[in-house]
Image (cartoon, rainbow, N blue to C red):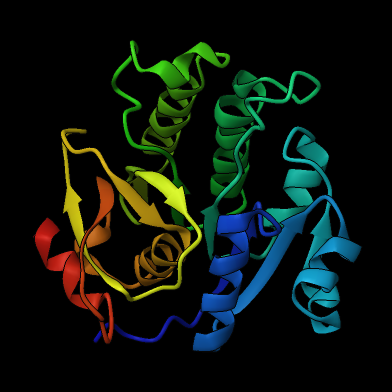
Amino acid sequence: MYMNYSGTVLVAGATGRTGQRIVKSLQLRGIAYRLFVRSREKACSLFDDTVAEQCVTGSAESPDDVRRAVEGIDAVICAIGGAVTDPQAAPPSAIDRDAVIRLASMARQSGVKQFILISSLAVTKPDHPLNKYGRVLDMKLEGENGVRELFHKEGLGFTIIRPGGLLDGPPLQHRLLLDTGDRITGSIDRSDVAEIAVLSLTAPSAWNRTFELIRAEEARQESLDHFFGMLS
């Protein structure tokens, strides 16, 4: 088992479908958190009114909002992502690249020691069909590169998780496959991505690593701790 985490974690994108599961995983473990959200009301409706005091409202596109969000934080779990099929939404270049790099840069300036990014499978494959939506995978890769450059320093650390196609099933129902090199394809439940993100806070083998994550065969799991052994 990994050690309990004693710092405060900022969850960016906390009201998204993956972000919600990250928050609930932190709550179950009793880990202190702060939520960076556009709407405090939406956050309270998704969780409960007690999260109101832990919310910083604003946009990841605003430097002032980001600066307020990261102040006094020890680690960031970033689960933001653009709505690539919505023509009215900000483009992937603004969210998956620029906002991610802005968040990482200001987090580092504020003294944050650890940055965990939820990215995507296939970001190294420019011909992937998803790239027709504003080159979203290319933008995610540039966001990753910014995080690696900022946090691959002495005393700091990053973890970049590249999940497969995201599903909404319950956690701990499948064996997981972790790999590096962007060689695998498949899907993964958001709830398992959230578990891996939170466990990365204290997993030594996740420190300064980029890895892909999909589910394998159905098999009830008591914990996902041991899957980090695949990265050792």
